[in-house]
Length: 304
Image (cartoon, rainbow, N blue to C red; front, top):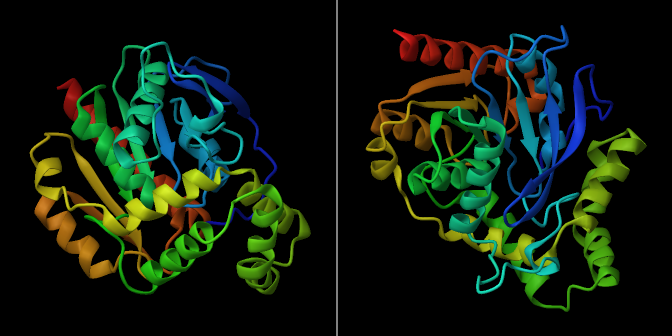
C-alpha cells in the first residue's frame, strides 16, 4: 500500500473532476506556479493497486514547475472516482469492467482530455504500469513516453502475490457490504497501519481511501495482478520510448525481473538508491528529477 507522507496540496496543485466519455474521474492537477501557460507536453500519472492520486503529491509541484501540466488520477472505483457499477453506460454500450483493457481505455480518455491534441508522458506505478501499458498498446491515443515505475512484465509473484491472494479470498468469501468492508479493514489491515504510521491524519486517509473504493474494483484488479500476461515484446514493438524506474529495495516485482524487462524493451533504466516499491513517496526529489530529465530528453529528440 503506497502511503503519502503528507496530504496538504502544494502551491499550484488543486483537485479537479475530469468529465470523460465513461463518466467522471477525480484528479489532482498541477500547473507551473509562475502563472505562465505550460509549454511542454503534459504528463498523466496512474497509481497502483490500493493506491490513489495522493501517492504522487510529493512529485506534482516539482514536475510542473519546469513548465508542464501534470495530472494524477484516481482510477474508476478508487477513492474519489465513482465505480463503473454506479454509472449508467451510454445506450447500447456495455458497462466497462475493471480488467486491465477497460482501465487502459479510461487512461486513454484521460490522456486525450489532458493532452488536448498533444501527446502525453504517461507514468504507471506498480499495477498502474500494467494499465498504462494497455493504453499504449491500444493505440487509441498518442503517448509521447511511458514510464514503468516499480512495475513488471506481467503477473506479480512472490510475497506480494501471496498478499493479493489473501485479499481476494477475503473479498470473495463475503458479501462486500460497507459494514463488512469495515470489518475486513479491522481484521486484515488496521493493525499493520497502526504499527507503521504514527500520523493519525494519514491513518484516517488510508482507511477512508480503502472503504471508499469499490469492492468489485479491488477484487477484479487483484485477479488481474495475478494473471496479467507478459506483453513486453508487444510494448517493445510499439515504438514508444520507455523508462524503467524502480527502487533498489523494491519488493513488488523483483529488481532482476525489472532489469530484464528493461533489456528486452531496449529501455532506459534508473534505480533509485535507498527506495523500495514507492520511490514517488520515499525519494520524490530523485524520482522527479529522473522523470523530468527523461521527458525533456525525449521532447528534445522530437523537436530535431
